[in-house]
Image (cartoon, rainbow, N blue to C red):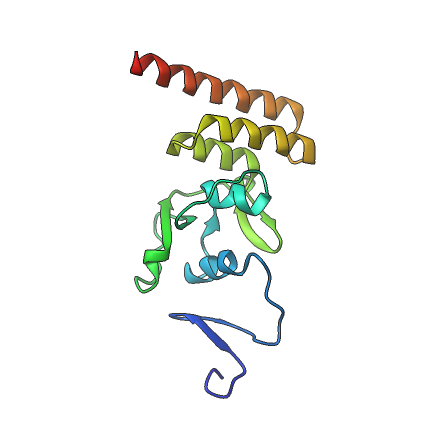
Length: 155
């Protein structure tokens, strides 16, 4: 089908239908396809997909099940995090599988994302109605606790 022009190759084993319009998140959808559809956008890439932060990750972050071993070709574009996610930690945004906002913020916090950026993301998520007030307050407490622990280690 690719030879006849009905599919466009975008990566090893990943194709798109050229008649469909491109979107701003095509690279994220292609990343999920690269994981054979078992991965989800996560960490800082999820913040970008939700429009909650202006972080700019150098690679697309994906969380894949521990037993998922995507193709090696093309892998240099992605940062894999192996974890078996609970179905309640996964949702969709623009038809792309992504970790929930709360899971995303916790993952970013554990991965070392700037706490200031995460506080802004929590505020924006609450404003957009993506987080309830109690969830947002809990996340702020976790962010503040992590920031406090880091500042004590530096002292």
